[in-house]
Length: 145
Image (tube, rainbow, N blue to C red; front, side, top):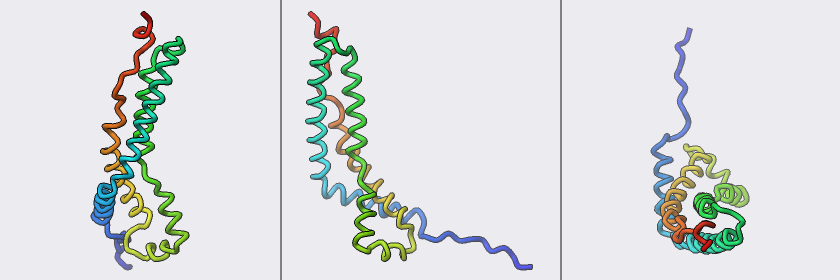
């Protein structure tokens, strides 16, 4: 009988994915103009909806406009920070780079996810302070005189 040979995993392991995430984070920091554009969009969005919910609260529509604004701020913070991994995969398929990248000793999908996580960390850090509503929306009790 032959001895059982332990299976070896294909790939370079976690250090390769951490390196991909680190390079992606550095690239995201170097091109942070995109994140600042998203920050401006988030600020405009929060301002518009804050004023809208302030008007609705003044007309007696809701008593918890502040909670709505916080909900919008947190959800948009996350949604605007997530990079489009599917767009990178689509571009690799269309350009033919996928065949080249599949022959590497690291997982293609693992590398793409690690790159996305590196970008995500930088975007979350940049968009985080902007996602806090700066002006509190007054509730119905504060509006009535």
